[in-house]
Amino acid sequence: MNLTYVQTVNLLLDVAPIVFQTPRFALKGGTALNLFIQDIPRLSVDIDVVFIDHQLDRDAALDEIAQELNRIELAIIEMGYQATIRKMHSGDEVKIIISNAEVEVKIEVNFVFRGTVLPLQNLSLSTKTQKLFSRNILLPVLSTSELYGSKLVAAMDRQHPRDLFDVLKMYESHGLSSGILDCFVAYLAGHNRPVHEVLFANAQPIEETFKNEFVGMTSEPINVEQLKRIQTKLITELPQALTYNHRNFLLSLVMATPDWSLLPFAHLQEMPAIKWKLKNLKSLKLKNPVKFQLQREELERRFRQSTS
Image 1 (tube, rainbow, N blue to C red):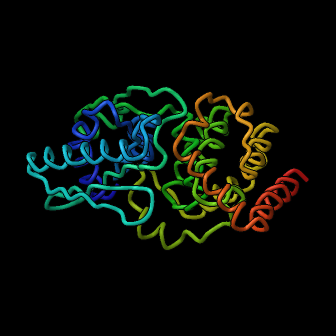
Image 2: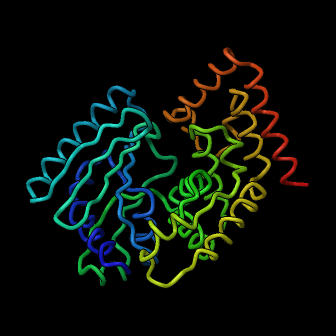
Image 3: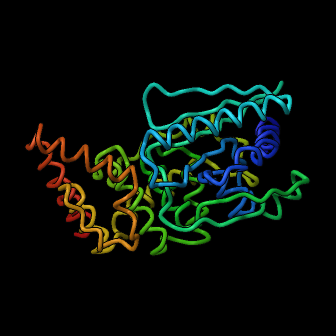
């Protein structure tokens, strides 16, 4: 493992307890998967945060997130580190950049996909992580199915080697389980890109990103060809793995008339990201009905191709 990545994880573990002192936040993403769920197959250098209350309106939620970030910034400065809040002028996230003399860690809070679809779990660091970093912390973490479901969306969307590696480990330990697929569909429904663009993604080149942003992260050697095979496997198998209910839910969603009974999450229609998606779809239907209809037709066509 690269020394810089190890130092970054040390800093991450120093500040993580401060971040999650509030009951409003929970951990998601690669740090949750690799330091808590899996036994550190790779290092992870960011803290991805979920604001877990889906019922607060947007302004109230943003106020609470801002208050928590200010609290975190002050507490981390008191620890002797540098901390700077970066407010995003576009996009769905706000972040804090934390640094010491050697490395930096990003804390990112997604303010659009607020809430969770499944109950949280409180987890300690994995056994190997505890041994490697000589410490243990207990944090609120998304459920394992929700972690992997949201990870699948990220892997299909950006196809970063880190995400593809996490998918590789998911295949080894869990496979495309029904719970993971349910969560994937829920997170896909709240994504800002059209459903068919993410679900039927074309493979993107990963060689440069692998060399510049991934080598040195894993506990065991892995080459880019292994990740390219996983990339192909995921792009091929994920659409085929969706059930009748999954497909019909997504088709109903893109027509802005979602059939909530097709997914096992009673409060999905209350999730802010889903509401925002539906608002945008209804707006598209009014402003550009041809494009709106084409999205439905394209999704139907891709589904037919994936089962033929």
